[in-house]
Amino acid sequence: MSDTINSSVLKEDRTISKDNNQLNSLLNENIRAKEVRLIDDEGNNHGVVATSKALLMAEDRGLDLIVVSPNQEPPVAKILDYGKYKYEIEKRAKESKKKQHTVDIKEVKVRYKIDVHDYNVKVNAIKKFIASGNKVKLVVMLRGREMQHSHLAYDLANRFLTDLANEKMTVEKKPSMDGRNVITILAP
Image (cartoon, rainbow, N blue to C red; front, side):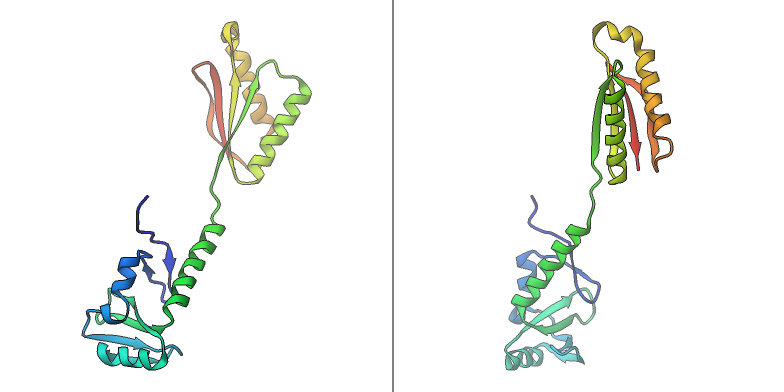
């Protein structure tokens, strides 16, 4: 695991690392720039101010001076409560993770001698997976002498595709042999 997580977004739409060393170097007395563009805790822009004067303003209000955009010339600094600022960054990162949907590949295994009811159960399972936004890997397994009848496995895979034709999906990989299995991949 890396120590740096680049996922937080500030109000200025600038990304900043949550690495503690980098945040501490952009905080109060650790700011190395001679001048900063200052924004106070109420959102008022004070223009370019000497860093020492900005630190005094922050101390008078009982808050911290934090550089929020270090890549600008001069860097942009805000007067904020550091603990609250750090908490909001972590909260935004969690919110953005919640909204992400990872596409999983669900695997449905069948044999080519499947019964009608079992077949319908598998079709309904595939429909649910596709509707929830996941990919589906359909595997028709062959064992032993069944390899001689691989055309029946292809027929079954194609039957799945025709029965699922009216679903909102695309066939990423058409039925093909992979070892002892006939595999096809479906995507929403």
